[in-house]
Length: 321
Figure 1 (spheres, rainbow, N blue to C red):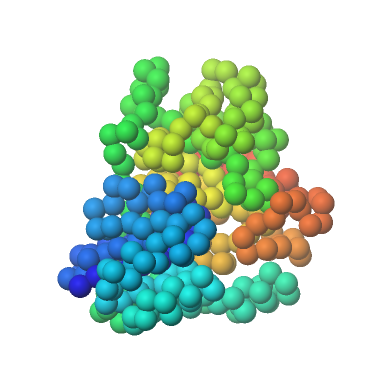
Figure 2: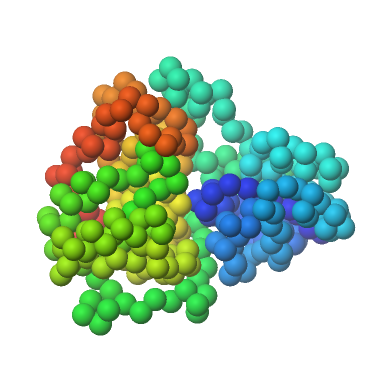
């Protein structure tokens, strides 16, 4: 018997499905297959609980013929959008999905009325798997590394005692401003490794120029797996609401999360790890979106620019105790 799990978007979203993947594989006799977009599949490459990963670039037609041949017993829809609905209808097998609470999210974003349940999205994912008699095992998220993911850490850094700062995010309003990094870095004693995409390479290089003895820039130089390797060995992590935040949680790294336009109330905060949230309170405009925006709708970006440097440093110090 086979079950197909689907989640199309974002590195972090795919990582958040891993407790359900593990639970189905360990608690049932089902062979687990997974469908996602090609650019996110790398986070599942070494996952021992998945027998087969199918990917698409954009359209279901790319794989639909192959999926029909698998003759799945069930489909677990952890995306719940028009594309996944089409797939459920095309495969014609029993399908289960999770409560997405779109109306409640809309109310929070547009009217600041909080009707969302106090539950993590992983807990909601398990509601989709409940008909398979699957239960949470409380083991957190998974991320499995391969030999190709190992990174040579400078010999001058003994016992891998370093912090990882995550530069950038998929949306501007989630990104930690470089001005905030400039204020935080000189107040810390530990070496700092910077990770991020190619669009953050210059930001990282600028921080190295300012703090050459303390900062090493890996932004734009590593694969997702290699960035995960650095996270797995870090003493603590500073990040915003990003996929790397969830990968850090998979390795149970102590994490300080700086929240910009989004909010942990949406249910996507670090799962099963030690963490602290830093938020600018009493901002009537926040959250301004459930995902992120290209620019601050108000133009002031206070949700990031008004973050307390002292509170961030104190939170990191607590992570290191």
